[in-house]
Length: 431
Image 1 (cartoon, rainbow, N blue to C red):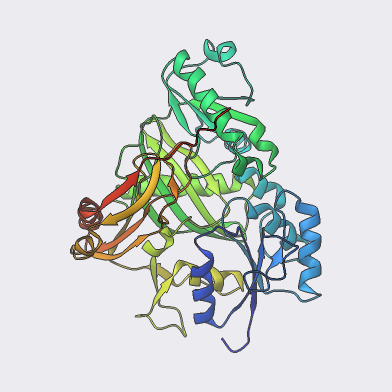
Image 2: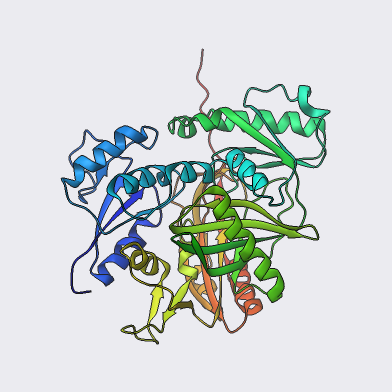
């Protein structure tokens, strides 16, 4: 690129992807300006000149970003994670940059508003109702059809999502999700959506994820992932993503069409999209259409080749590089996912405890097809499984000629890993 362009990146301080975007920006010669939810009383604690914002104070934070830009206008805007999407949309609107309407971004991160939008658009949706988090489950138990699923409105990564098969399980699940939503890390978000639950009928079927990018309202699918492990509950911890999908072309076309209709239903117009859906004999059920890229380190499973003029066809590009190019207005229609299959395993946390270490990483790395094993859990910290937890022990990445081999590689590597998780100590105070 001949001119240095600036991209304003909205992200939480805990996001895995900030470094990946930084590396991609350096390769492209793009300058990143961060807007992040960090303390505004400290003098640049991360040495990155980020603009401090508070995602629960959207209008005030938009003012802070405009002031922090000092009259300069970035070439584009991106948001990483669900919470930053609304603020990013507000600032894009103020600056007159391509983006999503703030109302669409807000609806995309609220499960109740998404369900309502999908239903209005004629997309298949489960029966659903909402209730205050303080609901007495006994008062609604008789009106439900089981199995059902209890969900917080605005947590991601299947956090707090619980399947229930009868009235007793409903009561227990509502109490469990209520405790989660009262946890300090959730309360710190100061999101009114955490005051409600959605309870919907369970959707049987196979689950998929779609990564795409919107340009002026037109969706381009970048990758479609199979989720080969059944996600039938009682919790819904995702483990393996494999691409390309092994489904017939007709099924893939139906999924892509449903995602495009879901984007339109929510009013999303421009930028990255990550969608989740279930497919059964009744059609494609959209679970979510998020106005942001795939989370965690999973984007490392995606590599792209570019055959457009001026781009070497043999070069490999990351998802972050593609999205930064798109944000500054480049045509990314020439980018296609590499020919080889890829898989990523999000290493699940088997039980509550203190992470003490892992054995077998070297052996796992020698499995044919394995590219990288990244352990992200920190030593001597408490690890918490779903539905309360929000992280993984790490990630395993693999490539192969066909999807089945890529999937087999990450499963074989995982079998070599042996994690030590000690018991969490309980402090008893004398009275």
